[in-house]
Amino acid sequence: MRLNKYIAQSGIASRRKADELTLSGAVTINGLVMDQPGYDVQDGDVVSVNGVVIRSEKKMVYLILNKPKGFVTTVSDDQGRPTVMDLVSDIEERIYPIGRLDCNTTGMLLLTNDGDLAYRLTHPKHHIYKTYRARVSGILSSERANRLRRGIDIGGFVTSRSNVEILKHGDHSTIVEIQIYEGKNRQVRKMFAAVGNKVIDLERIAIGELRLGHLKSGHYRKLTPREIEYLKRC
Ligand code: URA
Image (cartoon, rainbow, N blue to C red; front, side, top):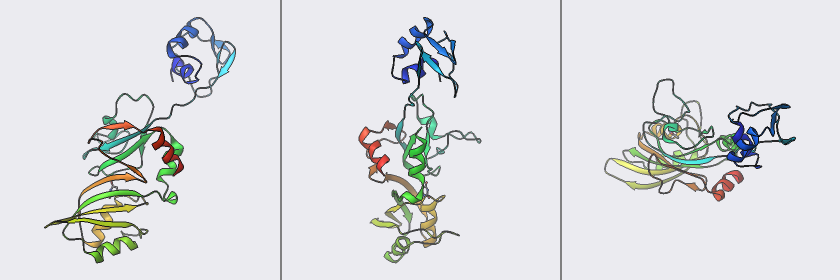
């Protein structure tokens, strides 16, 4: 991290003031005067300003993104496909997605640089429900919906209880909301396939109580302090 940013994040000065302090010789790194504001502070460097050691508070960033189809949920892709990171600009911190959505799944994705929160939100023991809206082929009978609710074998793994609500029966497809708290690879698609209904479209609309709302496809925003508090309490 650049020295001026490091000093600014310690709370003692703005970046501009940090540059002035550095140029005036007030800043030392590991006991030696450092007069270059662009110096790249390394882990383990001891930074002092006017003889007082300072520590940079890591700025935490929390974003909610409405992921479109065709973007992979990784920081970089070795096959050169577009990633969700291509949709995020203006964020200096090294953020990454919390959990995964398939390339063709749309909807709510959280991104952060808060490793503790990312770990807690993805661990199934915390039982945080994720809500998906799916359009599936054919009619989803109430008998099939009950099998999904009770838990179903998706090939070497039996899912836990889920909530299933049928929203609309069309002529050739059914719109369903399903809530699960596990995050097995392609779990929702496999669950519907196991009862004989293929997923045509899949969108994640909520994580716990936090809803995607009216965020446009491909757009993102910062979470509000209240939303961040909620996620930390989950
Ligand atoms: N289940 C799926 O099948 N796909 C997703 O992207 C998320 C959950």
